[in-house]
Length: 419
Figure 1 (cartoon, rainbow, N blue to C red):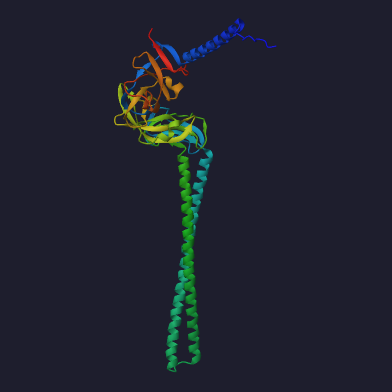
Figure 2: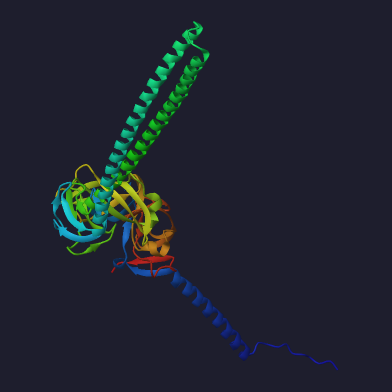
């Protein structure tokens, strides 16, 4: 039998459940929107931030460096020969003239070698003189022998020619002529042999004399060298200047090559500058810098670059351009602005703490009404200790927040509140 089925209706319990779920969803959505809104905006007291103006003006890339004033020329004094300090003629800081004695070293072995060399030279000189006298005597003997041979030759030649004419005239016999002919032939051979011996003897004597003179000259050269080595035991000023960094006391032993001190020339000054190795590829001779001394600005120019890097830094030598400051002294430290580029016109933003968090990729730009500041993308170029060069993203007249963004990295907009 058919039965009527009644249509189901929403119950009170079911309606309460649906209402609760809907409320939870709405509350969750409100929380998400509220949280997102709170992260994108932040109220900021204007007294706790720095707002700077973007301007267009002259820009030059430079780095601040420290330089130490040094003498223009410094000569280092080293012990050419080792020895014991026997006498000290001057003290550290003395003003010297070229050639003035500074200290005297004693070296017994070196002085003994000099004495032995002098004895050897005198002995060689004596022996050379004896050899020369003996050679001369031998040459005289040979010349006397040559004179006798020449005389006998001429006599034999005279008799031979006479006997030849007499033989033609049938005045003498053949046997007498042959005797004269044989005697003449003997004297010819004898003269030829004697002449050859004399020539060889002369050549040998000359060769021995040349060798003796060469050996003697070498020994004298060695003697002069030994005398110079002994003379170098007295250390003298190589130039006019001031003696500094002297390290020698009477009785001390100094090894060969050991540093003794230095002479600073009084002809002028240079500045030795330390630069971070990061700039090594951009530093070269001719770059200029300036510094302030006694309320006046002076210029310097790089003359020499030392490319060796030590502890992350390298050094350059700079010389004064034009006037040298009066009253400047060796050892003074100067704060120098070293220019890395020529002066140009650029859009500039003052340096500030914002760069540490943004890397120069974005910045908070203040709205025209001054009530908010919002993120804008920018591009930074060169920099100096005062400004960054803005390549794009900002224009002169804009205002930006340049103080630290340490607590603003997730914020899209700053609401500026005046106290």
